Image (tube, rainbow, N blue to C red; front, side, top):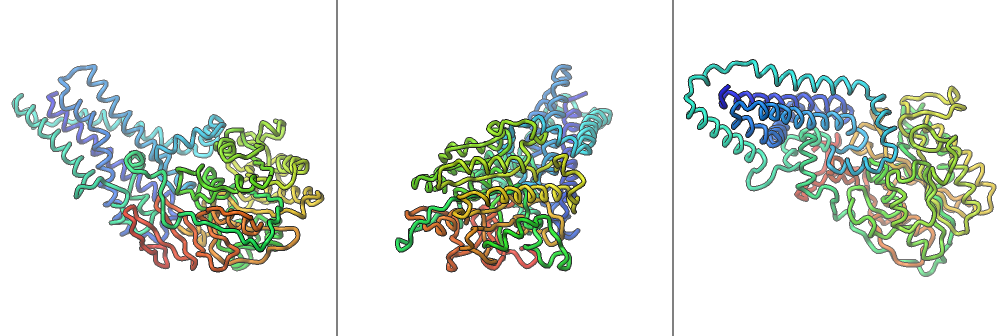
Length: 582
């Protein structure tokens, strides 16, 4: 086979890979259809057309070594095997990442970047999770096998094609033509990546996209992974996330109350009947009866939002007012732990997972938390749920016991885990809790019961009446109702403050966010010193109430009226219409 013949076949193979990328884009949109309810068929065709540049740019780039080997291989058997293996390995790996991304995107609302591997490193039970993942997404294995078959079969099938016209070329002409094709290939790759002197960026997707979800569909996973190395996408600093200085009211006395902050895994606002009075024509029962009853006795926000969609981002947001979009310099921010320790607070963190999970213990150590309580400290494997850690009910009782022997004042932070995939219950609750719309619903109910039992216990303790409790969720989840299928509702969570003495109560319609917890709590306590926070004091009616979230690393601002704006990578702010589109 002459080199021109071989090179032309190599280019055909690369073109087929680009076609597979388009098929994957179709699967991405179909699998996440609830984020594309307002995307018409014509809009979808536009995304496919706009995505072609991203696909060709990355496919041509990652196959440059393969093209060069194909062009200059003189029928060397070893080089032929290496060339084939390289093509299959590189392109199969790229497509596997896309397949993972299709399944992973609805949870995080981000395309995969190289930061994903750092996130995996925080999972101390990765072996268990991998088997669970394969069980939950068994059909993805068929997709995986199908992709391997498609690439290998396609490669071999193209080998059988006879390009007879190349036989008419003289040997010298074949060499020259092959060289010219390589130069053209390289130029096309360069032109796709660089336009008007600028490297292809996620901002270019806005030419065909009208929402961040459509931006996500226009790009592809390998591009996002590579661009995460080119651009500083791991930490974005905005005017809306700059810290402000809060000064103490010297006319008021520091109350020195105990503080208990409870971060609830996956407790979307959608789970609460109280926060959804109009859902299902006003007949919605919800899955959090105890928390709803507690909310009514405290101050609860009807328009609260998480700052991110990952559990690992929730703790810095709640404790240090650092939104998820800022992933660098988290340790340098003022945090409620350090601020309260200055006034002799005992500090504790409770999370029943494997020690080291999410690097919570490392973060706690960084900000100076005195006591970390995890699976190791609980020290009773009989209460292990088989995947993540200790069931919520026994672990919250353990927390209550520890709190009761802790020197006051104290701040305890708890992060539950039973309301997480794989959504199983302790044996004694099987058949006693209704299933609900989604598998997570029964687990939310179980965690709600566990919280009820916790409060039954601690309400008998002396420190209880001198305590302020703060509840929020780490993030929202995949929606069940159409009312929650939007870029704003994708971050909707419960957030409320409860005090047994009733000093803070009532429904609050302000837009609120996780990073508001620290300044609001410290102002409630009449903290006697200055501190800095990017959050808003929700007890101040004159505050600029808003929420900062992000979708595919595109900052999303929810203003005081609930309207949405997005900030492009060039700093341009664009406001969405009533359908949350440009």
